Length: 93
Ligand SMILES: [Zn+2]
Ligand SMILES: [Zn+2]
Image 1 (cartoon, helix red, strand yellow):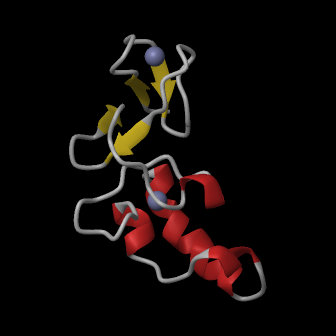
Image 2: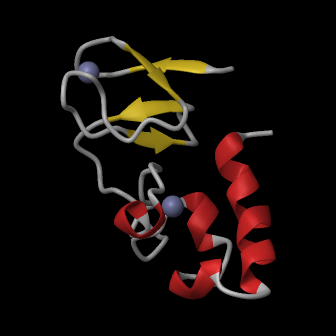
Image 3: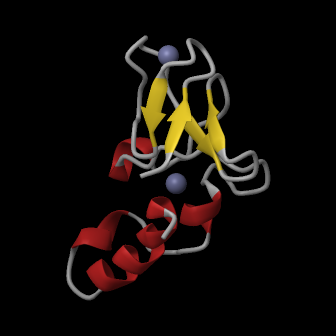
C-alpha cells in the first residue's frame, strides 16, 4: 500500500483518502504524485468520491476522469464495466 502525507499537517494519508485527520480536503495530484490542498478538486469529487485534483485543461475533471466520457450513469448497466476500468487509474495498479 502506498502512503502519502497531508501537505497541511504531514500526517499519513492513504491513496483513497478524501480528507485528512486535520480536516484538510486532500486532492491527489498525479503529476507530483502526492496530495495537495487548496487546489481545484475534480468535478467528480462529490459524484463518485474521486479525490484527484482537477487538471487545468480538463474542464474541471482530473486526469483519470477526463479520459472517460462516462459520467453519472456509470453505475448502471454496461457502463459499470467501463467505469471500473477507468477507475483502475485511481488504484494505481
Ligand atoms: Zn492534515
Ligand atoms: Zn476525477
